[in-house]
Image 1 (cartoon, rainbow, N blue to C red):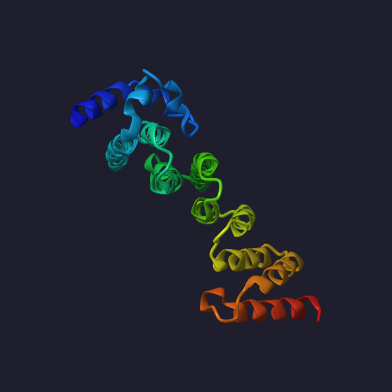
Image 2: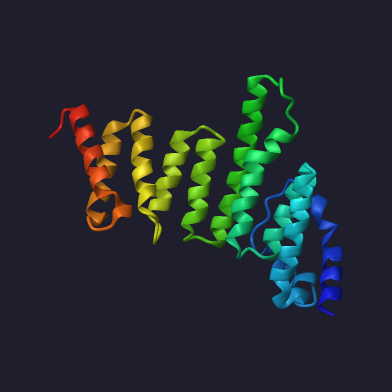
Length: 229
């Protein structure tokens, strides 16, 4: 019976796939069907159905099917927005993989950069939807920072994402430290110095992961650069 229900659900969701290819769906949006609707029937089987949809997403990704991959990503998180795995790996597909599928090796640099920008924008929309479902998630915000930095080459956007991530409970120490380095690379040493001074009191001296000594050294280097004591 569960297998039959899963098959019927997958069949019922198929017409939505192409409609969702270019649409950013809100987490839990399909749950509005509720009651006797399709999502109401799923009930506690959301996780199983979403896992099945993720497998189909992976198949579409392996075949480099742009429309299918985008649509199935949206459908997967619409069915079950809870696993961070879907959001993280879906964003990576959108940012790093899909933009390269239609590019020839000899494409002009301007075309490559445009494709990269579009991929970053799609991944950002996707991850912002994930953050709406997981507002305290440090992992999703760090992933957005990485995408801005690696796929978009945008240090300023990455630094802003790391600022947001650093303010979340349980954020790794390195998040704030890397933000300070990005600010310095952006030619904003005064802002970097102020930021490192701000985070220093929260770095325990007895925790190697905090790298308090490293931060102190960077503060001294910036003070010397700026002629401050």
